[in-house]
Length: 219
Ligand SMILES: [Zn+2]
Image 1 (tube, rainbow, N blue to C red):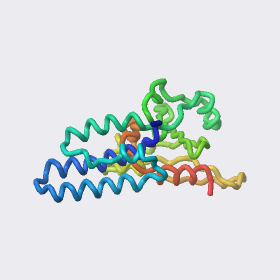
Image 2: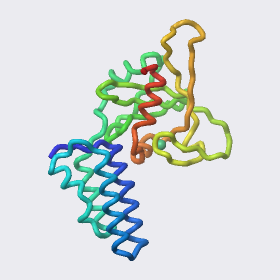
Image 3: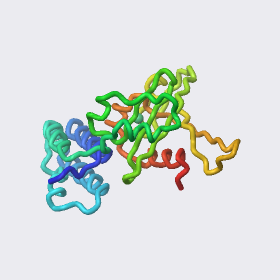
């Protein structure tokens, strides 16, 4: 069986199993546990289409009955998870060709399975995001804005809440169809500064793709 679970789908399954774990730990009623398990099972199957019998078998969580099983199961499942394809420095440079002195991501940034590749150039306070959208490479260069406020921020990609050292407000430069002057557009949102951690949490690519399309002026 080949890897068939995308990284964000794996994160989604992980979250559903954390819920199940809570049911195992906090609930003594076996019927409630079984009902929770079958609900989580349906939720997991719902994010996939065209599963083979073998794949369905692997995603069958009815065999899990203790928190210990969950950890082992997640480790087993991880063997069937794939992330975005690794990018070469040439591909990254081409993606951000408008940046004068582009700082490339660290060598080990692509070691783990990623939903998106993200890295920061501290000297110019920019967060770079690269993503493979159905085979097309897309990127955004986001200026990091520090407001100095004590308020917490919510990452639009993974819903993690943190202060602005963890989750910061950024504004990417947007492409416009009108090349003339004044055609400049800017949007803003909150996002994790630690892309590695964000990649371990993001369970839906909807917002990521929405912002990338908006920034790159793709309808
Ligand atoms: Zn995040």
